[in-house]
Length: 334
Image 1 (cartoon, rainbow, N blue to C red):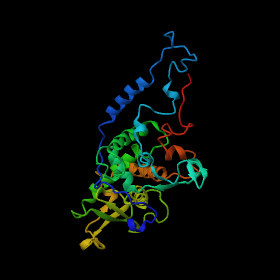
Image 2 (image 1 turned 135 degrees about the horizontal axis):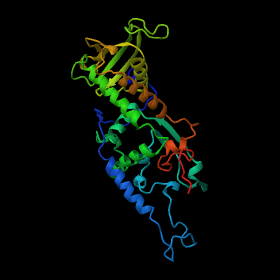
Image 3 (image 1 turned 180 degrees about the vertical axis):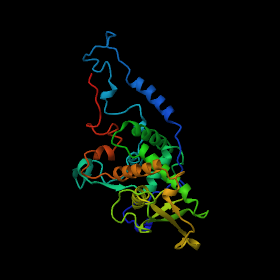
Image 4 (image 1 turned 120 degrees about the horizontal axis):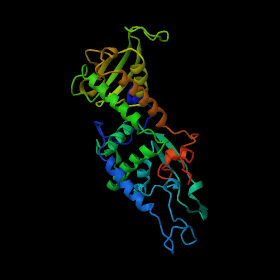
């Protein structure tokens, strides 16, 4: 399915192209900074008698960071704009809430006027965010926020990836999935002519040479299973494409054929050659299939927040719920 045919996705934010993935290089710096700032915030405060006893004049003589609801050592407070705060969420919260004030002489309050709409971010927006986290693009899709907010967003997402149990999207499974897409692109180079920024993948079932249990019809010769449009990094351009690749490529024996944009960018033209997935063990390994399936499952589940989700507030507004929901946070008894 082409991006134009997928009517449910949002593509209004520009993305970095191409998206490249690698290993980040600032985590150690961030962690050192967090430890230093946490020690300052958690410093014991002596009372009038230079002891650390609880009293009316010293209500918190020995702070316990594990009981804190906020995270003062991480720069969440540097995110001033709504757009910067929304970038921490895996979805796109669009708020219609009004500030407290008077309308026609009647007082209004922010908590009961307006609403919040939740929209799913497009797959390429998620891919660009992952590239931004891993220091592999310039975050051109975040033009609405200041450079200072970009730096703080980068650091805050790194902290959330490690410490927030309900924000799992930008984690290991997603990184492995986009790595699998990049490997898939390397395999496609065998049949895609150079110079084409995108391609339409045709997935046909084929008879397996390795007998195995399967549903009726799953080993039929050259039965069409789907079309997937990918960009030049091998990343599907919509959620239907991610789902089709994970189901067909990783769970079936398929033949891959490719269509490329026709002359002048109009229509599609068939590229010569084909790839049999089970005949490319050097690139398309069993580990590659597992990374694709697991990552696609995480993305499909975690990129959307339902109104009935018990972690709704924590997923949509991570700035005010840095540890996730109270039920998710392990509180150590002191």
